[in-house]
Length: 303
Length: 252
Image (cartoon, rainbow over all chains, first blue to last red):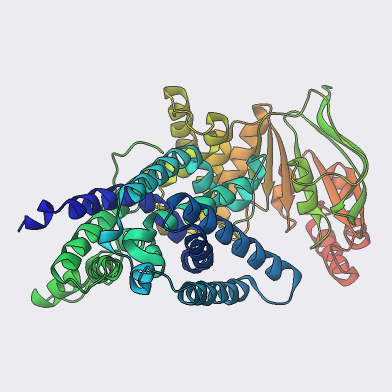
């Protein structure tokens, strides 16, 4: 059962994904809360050419990958909002157009340059890819993310719930969203080796959407999102270890997807199948039940 | 009489270089309630945003006699409000204290007490642990009034606070506004509908057709003025006049 932990690269992967889960959980949670899930997906693809160009120019250097990825992410995001503001195309369409171009461009350059890295591990991740440098990157990413979040949590909550109120009470109302989008790109880069460019955003969004079914307070939401992310990572790694041809990214995202579906089916705020079945079994009339318990988490401290 | 908290003379307001309303003059003393009335696009929101420093006046200045207060409480319209956010009524009220607590400041005993009082006064104490998505419109508005109370500000701006709120809730929230004014807080009430609310105001400012008029409610909000500033059509005004003479000539 635990023989997989005898391998050094698996121990690395287990640690790396744990730290990564700490980092991506709050980012994913707020992507979902801010209704930016699809924008997150677009940004994930948009950073591909940056990573590829950095890779072609200076090999497997983590620093150049981060610089390239951040640059590409910022350029595409800025260009998308410029196009939306100055032309007739709306924001979602301009973002979709640009990220498709960026993704194609990235794969094109990677193939044309005759890369030594197999395309599959680039797109879908590889548990073997987690070297010392990647561990460092994940550690730094998690540190920056958690420190930033402790600082921007209140402004972020306020600007998400009530942007008009936030604008009235803040001196630099735009800043918090910019910091947040920077953290999104940073975490996508941190998740790149384990999950690949196509799957990285899955570890952000799916645990966050699954957790949303179970809680009604922000603190518990962030904690449960982390637990779901961690469970997905470890179970996914396990599967990817025993099925050698399965890259780690899709394995992790499929586990996260299973958690999402179970949450959707069984949670009180989802379809609540358990309660409905009980009603039939007792033979009583299906009473209209509250979609979740009335007083959630009454003993929690005020945020 | 005391000096005004804020006054303006000949203010021109607008977005960028597009003027919306000109020659806005008013004065608001401590403990007074000022109502702002006008048709859509007359500059009500522009005035609110200018007071909040989100917009700058195109010409003229706002005169804060004792300096601009650190906090201006604000309750806007709920059009962009996200009530599915996983947070409880209690936390929404606590949000009123966040700007002065900064990024990391803890909610201390005094602040906790303020929040409890606000929940009690707005009638939201027994729903304090409910998530926002289960609230009715009236309950949500009460919770937002609790947040406004927790802001503990000398000036309170309320932008159409009674939209889609039932009569009894409106009456209770109005008595809160009266209470704030006896505490010496100044209140600016932006109103879309003329209603009994106006009886709670010390003065009124009507905006419309790029112009404005300020004074006591009974002399500003006459049917002739409401027509002149584009708030009512002349047939609506005639109807109102007829109603009045039947009712014995009370002001609008």
